[in-house]
Length: 277
Image (cartoon, rainbow, N blue to C red; front, side, top):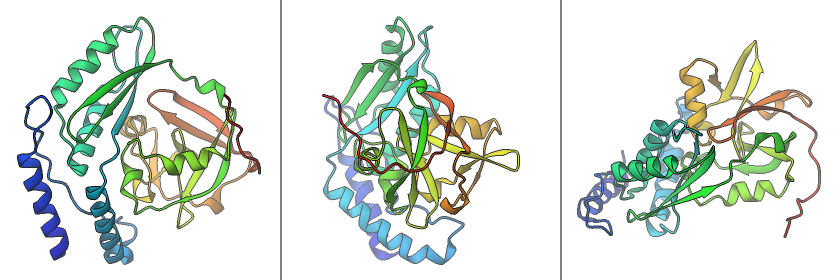
């Protein structure tokens, strides 16, 4: 670790020890790393990856005008699907960005809100850096409204720390959504031409009778449904290049709200989505 990274890490620890949330509760001790881990499959890029990630984290420190986000599906019996995985991801992001978080209180609030849902629904959790949080209830999105996938012209930067955490800073996804409509989604790729995810879900491709999902190091959100499918051996990880994709092939998409659904990959359409008012 460089001198800059060591100093920044100590400063993050110092800030977290002295910061307090709005209700007077101490925030969770959260020293965060300044850089993303260098992908094991790109050892040649180690130095540049660390340097640029350190700069990215310095920008995050100067501008915390974003919130952490978790979108969860409630069941008709009042349970929250994959709640443990959602809470673990939230905790990891709090530690990374240095956000205050009373995880036990948030879990109680989520559980209480889910019990009040009379049917399967969607809960949206927003957490600010100081520990304030909101819970919003929304109608459950149905995967059946999507019919096709297309390739996006948008390229993500795998060194961007916001790709690896679910936050309200979603400009790259919003830009990509302009290339789709309400019945389609688009597949993103990084600066190396490696497939990452769609704007709404993680994905997988069938290769040699296995469903293969892109590695997180390519620059994508480690989804809770993705983690569940990996744990049950329904998925394996690998790097997938755009050049390997075939028009017409079935792509498996998944997130914790919509579940698992398959969509065909179709040729890119050169039109901009019209917003409904």
